[in-house]
Image 1 (tube, helix red, strand yellow):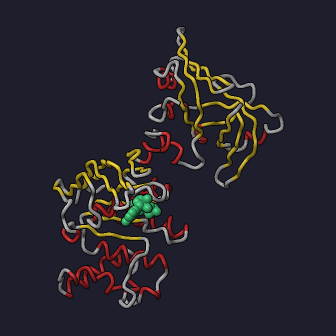
Image 2: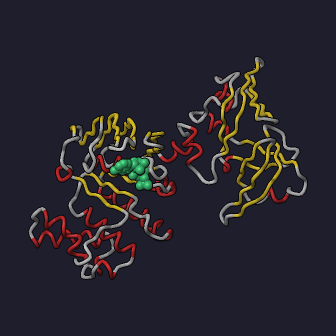
Image 3: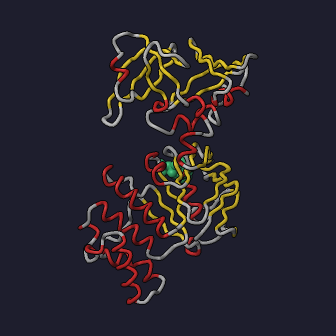
Length: 367
Ligand code: ATP
């Protein structure tokens, strides 16, 4: 399957808009790479340049190690799937799927066989005689996928293929698409602004902001050890707590983390101490995920912070507590209710699990 390498790729449009700014990115053989970022960050432009629909202003695009900047789209072994499906309305489902094969001169018998195989893999074998207008949104998207798969491309490029579908169907199809693509072993670049999609489907996620690549890694890496503050704040719901802190390493071997009006005392052998110790004397930003913080009883020993509950939010599968801890507000996963049980008394203690350590790696920057 096709490998992709972007080397310092920049795209400046005629009106001066820098849509993509010195992006370096590799997509490995058979890898499912998701490009994630807010609207206008340059994701589609990257995809269009890989497809050959846009030319880079500078930099190199390599397909299977060969410079492809000037390679016409039809010579790239690429299949694209867009959000608007773009099916031919006057053709049947079968003819829509068969269309790329007809264009490339495949004989009717093997063509029919390939269409049947693809349609049954996608669960649309029984609607081959229908027109697109007689299908549901999910079926239409499967037909679009079928048309992309049927040519056995080396690379799939998908631009928000699920964004026109309702949320239940989106969840169903995202599992289906990633399963199918993995089965086929085809390298894929998948563009979305939906982080749930990105984190559930990707082998690796590339996060962009204003044309610049912010971070690339497995879903676990970008979620747990974001490379920049932007990624730390962008990924995850609720948003990661980001607190300014000063770090002091004490000679008798413990570390204090001053968070505004409160301090955490971390023993030297605590993994979090090692993560922050080299920022001695500096102001940093510490990130803590709500799910890594847990409520404890007011008289609990250890590294705890005190907070006042502002409000609770119940989401069915989890409950979140929003707290003021001095000048800052944070959000904590309620973990089954102890916060509510204590909410009459005002001041609260919160234990920091391994959260500080999680954040202080790459996400920690001088404030
Ligand atoms: P979305 O999720 O909304 O599709 P995106 O992340 O895919 O956004 P792009 O479509 O790649 O973003 O656009 C990146 C930037 O380039 C935007 O500021 C957009 O307005 C601009 N842009 C895109 N195409 C052109 C063009 N042909 N001429 C000028 N500017 C353009």
